[in-house]
Image (tube, rainbow, N blue to C red):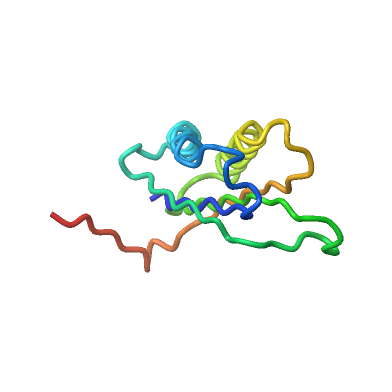
Length: 118
């Protein structure tokens, strides 16, 4: 934990540096959710084509989902979401019309398991 998924439309490929964005989200998780850096894991997914609104214009979107083990307050999760949203906006600064969103959700401690192989 945290499990982080950064999804973006194909038309944003090259508009931001994926690894740098992921590392900055890791730092925000440490700052706002009291995660440890070594526990942060990100997947960056180019989801290909997207349809936004009525589909009349080319859709640009980026969405970040952060899964945290239960125990953070709604205020802490909200602060993390706001900080990540601001970081997304900074990553694509100068490109208007991009739909940005963030979801911070609780992971079920009864069913989540983790193992690091040796």
